[in-house]
Amino acid sequence: MNEASGASDPSQSSERTVRSLLATIVTTVAAAAPDTVSVPDGYRRACRSLSLSPSAEAILTAGYGAAGCAVAPSFLAVAVGGPLGTVVSLPLLTGALGVAALARYGVPFAADAKRVRTLGAAPSLVSALVLGATLWPSAERATAFATRASDTPLAARLYTHRRRAAGTPRSGLNSFAAAWGDAFPALERAVGLVERATAAPASDRPTILDSARRQILDGTRDEMAAFAASLRGPATGLYAFGVLLPLAMVSLLPAVAAAGIPVGGPVLAALYGIALPAALLVACAWLLGRRPVAFPPTAVPRSHPDLPDTIHPTIIAGVAGTVAGGALGNALVASWATPVGALGTGTGVVLVVHYRPAKRVRDRVDAVEAGLPDLLSSVGRRLDGGQSVESSLNEATADASSPTKEIIDAAVARQAQLGTSVEGAFLGPGGALATLPSRRARRAATLLGTAAAVGPPAGEALTAMGDHLDELRAVERETRRDLARITETLSNTAALFGPLVGGATVALSGSMNGGSGQFTAVPSATLGLVVGWYVLVLAVLLTALSTGLHRGLDRALVGYRAGLALLSATATFLAAVVATGLLI
Image 1 (tube, rainbow, N blue to C red):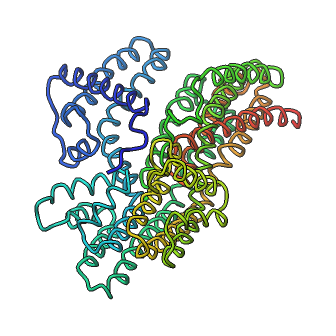
Image 2: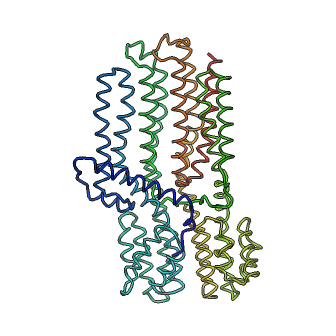
Image 3: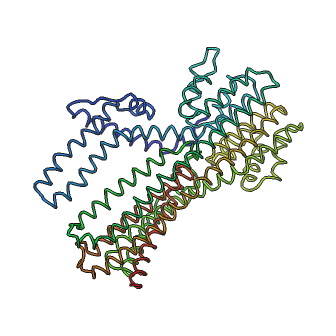
């Protein structure tokens, strides 16, 4: 198998450090607990899937132990401190219960999310198997080619099954297909067809392999269509109970106070500052975890040359944004708007500045991948006509679009200067794809290198690969179009509608209070801070949900869009407060 492109990325070292620290904490807390707990078999499988170093018993015991340690102090604070004790104990108790829930339900959820993300590479892996079976009618060689051409976790699983089958008549395809059959039946059918094709007569092989490609594409399309249809109900509920109802409740505070129901600042702070954001976070995570076959993008490593070497520009921009946002909120609204404007603007600027370079790299990857189908089809036709891969690539640059053309030109020039192989010109040290984090482009380069060794018989395989990539992009466009109506509503709510309603509600409540709390127990300044915080939380969570549903959880894209949403939400919220105040 190829080494992962980000194998030396410093972020992996940081992740290992964090995992080691968490494992130490969990083991220490579990050792202090008096008893262990009963662990379901599914929970053990989830821990193994996540490669967690603490045992399943230790994780559950530590989670329950942390919750138990916080319960007694919380009740004691309520009994001794009265209302103030209640305010103090609520975050502690909520956090402890959250740790227990995370230990019990977060681990299986993370395992399911990992499995979904792993299966996102299923169409690409099947295409590599099909191409391997087209070039060599051998299940073993097709499997070896597919694992060499991909560095995805799914390909690593296939490699494990192939290694276990070494020295036996089997190739590992059957056991691999059976292992993933329950999670993604189309993958099991497609892999089974590939193995069947390697034993079929040569005249029947193309039809069977085409059926394998069709199975995985249709299965992916059906999974995403079913998910989009099932998403409308939960998304509507999230919109109603996460946005409309909480903001409408604020406008009802005068009526609640008139009815004699005590709703003070601490209660609102606990509700809008902790309880509702926590519930919204859980709901967003649940929806994202249900997203099938996610077409996961390749992460942009922190060592990428187009990413800045220092965070100083981000810090400077963040400080400037914080100061400007706080000053603007204080000047246009009131002193209570200073922290809202500072937090929203400062955080938004930090996210935008920090993730913009990675977003540009991601845009370039998308542009290069868009040109791959035409490139492979063009080279395949020329190769089928008797030309070499080298001359075919040289001629294909005339038809290619930028930036795919730039990649080909760089590879052709490198091969001519250094006399390296086709695959080396793309993937070798300093190659044309050395700094492009794209699994599809690397797999295409591997196929081109293989075609250069095989010769004209590989022309048909290259053309088929181009057609497959074109069909795969069509499936992605269809799935995103199915989700677009829901994700656009979430994005617009996060950046515009939610802040607009929140700002208008705060201004209306302030006018009814007369600015002094005459009709409610909550001063306008407290109400503005609470609602302003919740508006910013909505901007981040709904944008992350929308982007994750539409494009998969690409950290750079989610961070960049969340930053833009925060800037828009902050400006809209403050403008709505001012505009509504002028109207009333």
